[in-house]
Image 1 (cartoon, rainbow, N blue to C red):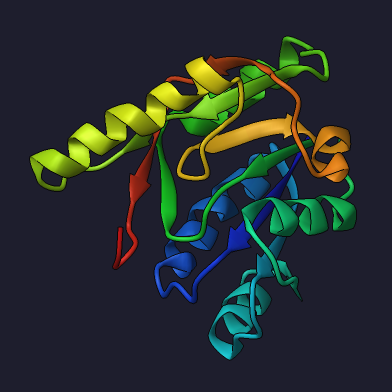
Image 2: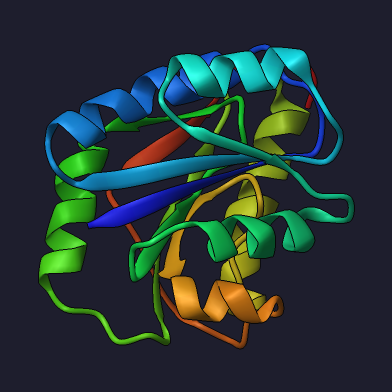
Length: 176
């Protein structure tokens, strides 16, 4: 099973859409637990997390610090990291279940590529976002990524062997 970490750098109303999409994963038995880590206290995000049965905590710092804090609070060996406001689409649950069934090693990671329908400059930016893991060996925050929880607890990820899943992360955020 996979735990979910939602690192929230901003107070994003579309986080409720992200949490709603995860309910199906819990019902299917693919996702185990969830924690929303906010950069600053937020009654809105805390309310969303509570309504979805998701844990909530606050941690100051950059994206990596929020992910590390979330990894310290979850129980599964693998973590799905999703930026609140992004919603997985397509057959993402089956893709995740199949990837875990293949028994990946800790240095393996799975990505759910980012997608946007916005204007052409945003789509060009999407190409750069989805190309970053090829160059760096690390996922971009706008992609959904499944990484070994033990690696996330270290704080800095090593170069990972990543595979893109046949699904998409759709942007529902109000800002880009």
